Image: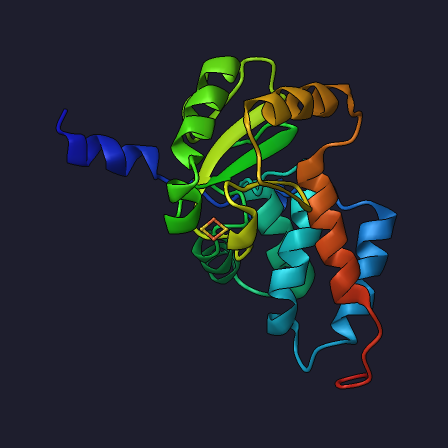
Length: 207
Ligand code: FES
């Protein structure tokens, strides 16, 4: 099989669940949040982005086909439209299930100059995974990202809602121990924080 065909199969999206197959999983709290968000925007199309953040939290950090179908169903939009939005933005996890904590390593210019790849190699060695991979115990996913807009803290890592930098190997050791001891997923924590920002009162489009 050629590389091209192989890449195509990796990126293949799951088929959209049929309406009669929907297994809606939003909690009562999530449904109430979405109902409030509907009053913040002039139309339901505008709710797709915050709706996807609710789904990313409710589905454990990964927007699978069911999650996207639930957002489409609750907003009265097509599956294709919601999937198109979800797969356009890199902060939505649509390619694969992710670990409890996603370690995002900035390797852009400033971080690169300050040793980002040394930190990345150290993380790969300690975790036994490469970029885009998740540890066998499901705790960590490692990702390479573009500039996180905090270049003065290079080399920088983002984990959930938190920035860590400048980091060195000793910092990474302490950080991994701390993350392993946490009960809450920083991936869903980030999604929840973003939902809360969207929920802040606005009278712009209140109905
Ligand atoms: S280059 Fe890493 S935060 Fe800007």
